[in-house]
Image (cartoon, rainbow, N blue to C red):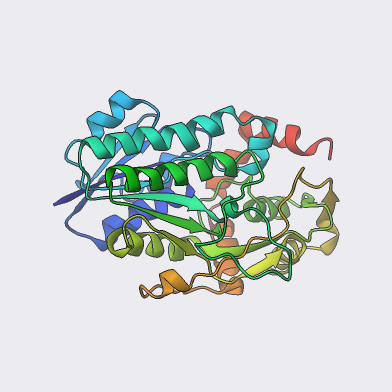
Amino acid sequence: MKTMLVTGGAGFIGSHFVRHILNTYEDYKVINLDKLTYAGNPENLSDVADSPRYEFVTGDICNAELVNYLMQGVDLVANFAAESHVDRSIMGAEEFMRSNALGVYTLLAAAREHEVERFLQVSTDEVYGSLEEDEDPWTEESPISPRNPYSVPKAAGDQMARAFAITYGLPVVITRASNNIGPFQYPEKRVPIYITNALDDLPLPVYGAGVAIRDHLYVTDHCEAIDLVLHQGVVGEAYNVGSENEADGLTVAKKILEYLEKPGDLIQHVADRPGHDMRYAMNATKIQSLGWKPKFDFDEAMRLTVEWYLGNEAWWRNIRESASYREYYEKQYSNR
């Protein structure tokens, strides 16, 4: 029986990965360490909560004593724990620096102390910066050039992981993924906020002219990629995980309204995000050489995502009606 420590496993992507590992490997035990900040939700894993191979621990990856205790006997680590929303990082970056940089160091130091077999750092395409529409997608050799308070500490975490591989020989691998969509995504990100607003006949807040382009990766495709890199990736190297499902914000909003048969006048252009990166796109040839490729194109990924929110209103309604969500929404959009 192998033991895997998954950090941030009650969040959007992490919860899918925990489920993926438990369903894929009968001889794996998963310890899920999650601080349960606003976007962490144990309900995301209610279907596996009673598994004898699953253990949930509430805690902070910056707590070195707790991390060292949990790391005992761990074979594999997958670090999803992070503050992840650019707009929130613009409001205040201190917690992003703490979790996304210092937290990574704390985990790496404990992993080195306990000689884990593999450590996977889950990162983002945003560490590369911003592309123009006619530029070639980033490769793993592209320079790191983060431009917002979210991506700067994520890049620092990447570089610290790489430094531990070079300096101490820690068997680290890194994945950098494009924008994930799918079930259980907290309704502050572009796709779920558009879906849930449309379902309530509320305006869809499209930043600026709606021309910022993102690649949309279905979350289960991402989990399969992480699994592959964790087990077969070359130690010390990074792997881009992209699906070539590029679309701008206005196209995404129109697609969602089309699926839900809602009127186009629900689209509301609002003041753009400060320093908004205009395009993210990655060359995923390297991970494809390991045998991975995405199963879902843009239309299918969007359809499945919309259908999940349609069928799980209680989950997102509970979040949207909370005082913390209403306070965030008011702060974020009232003056735009």
